[in-house]
Length: 510
Image (tube, rainbow, N blue to C red):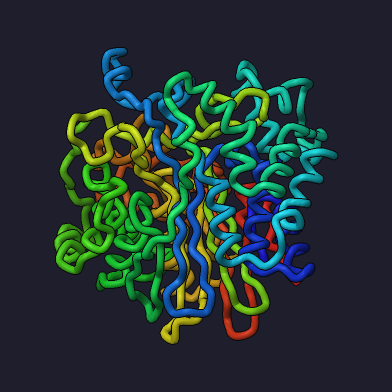
């Protein structure tokens, strides 16, 4: 089974498994198709994180997030009067993309088919065309003036319009033939160095941006829940879920007490995220029992807690795949926000992400923008194992700062309330956002965060307002609440659900 935001990607992953590939091959194939068809959310110019269950009790964890170039200069931005890295239009937002390094690392360690076969569906769609999704068509006006966006702006695009991406087909062929060298040391690498105009040197692209790392976990609801360590913010999903699991309060998702518990534990867990999260943060210390106990003590079931203000001045795809042997892959890949930095590498057609917006410009901050550093990341894949160490579920979502909040809601519904993947995915959600949100600034002032409620959510509003929460209501099945997917492994049965909020998603299997 494969779940993703695009039926073309899910179908490609299933076809790869039918051809003898495994879940790792399927995940790469699906991600490659998404890099072609879903450029407004992910692509070759972005980063990647993954968790892989291979049958051992401890899953593999892959961090394929890029580093700033050797020419990174925070003083340039400070002298320009900036408080942070700009979201668009500035090369400082573009760390060396890790996606292709992630594919190569995942394939080298876990894959079975050759890259030619795995990337063939994406190459075919890029060369011969695919129908634009409704969300892609609606997002294209945002890049109308971006140099290099010809694939999408050469003529008007509506939902269903056929788009071809010949330059991307050629880049994928080069990767299939020459591996990472075909990307980082080929036309793309040359174009990135030229665009950077001093931001990068060739050596920045020679060193792989992928590392096998030790995953983090918590034991809750009779299961072990895993995520990737910092520079990922995945620890927040585990911390908030552990606090929810250990709280002695109402566990009925229809009750406002359930929503209040989840909102508060997520807000308390993330109150110091901007201070503590960096590539060198100690993930185990961030999940230490004494730290969680201090956080738990702040919770009041009858009232919104006051957490300190932090006085320091997206878009993504998630996919999951399980094969007949029981291998499971939880993979997340991203441009950061929308079309990324609104910069394209030369004539390659590769849109560059804006993950550098996670950097800080403050002197001595552990996540300061500086040469060869990785920025804090919102990407948070999740994997669940049972008491025997077997694969239970793959869970994840897009959503910027809201990713851990959505994951904790899904874990609570799936593991604590026993809901099916379809019920958990389709249920209305809450999410915290800043008063003037951009998807990445929720935790600048945790006490100012507003609770947004999805239009079809349970009747939580009055109860949350009585507890002191400021409420903002949005439309039913809004993309503001993520595009989440679940594959649940129960006995010999796979139950999967793709998020209807993506409009074109698919849970496909055989």
